[in-house]
Amino acid sequence: MPKVGMAPVRREIVKAVIECVAEQGLEAMTMDGVAKRAGVSKGVVDYYFAVKRDLLLEAFEAFLESYNRQIVELVRPELGAVEMMEIAIDVFIYFF
Image (tube, rainbow, N blue to C red; front, side, top):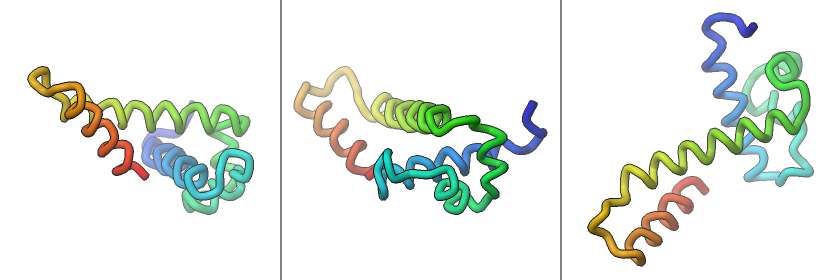
């Protein structure tokens, strides 16, 4: 069971994963690199995520939730298809 108050640390690790993947790619990303970027020890990363796959899955889920939330906030029923696609592209570019 994670310690109380450690949710911000876990979120920082997930954020570091997304940044590392964006800069280095999936294959080059390491648990050590994620720990360094998040400002925690590798032991903390290992405590929350047993393997690289678990770390990537949670990071991608967090990214997709955030992306979806942005799209839902901006798209309205009265918009046309082209306008909706432009919003989706703009939100995607914002993340990168």
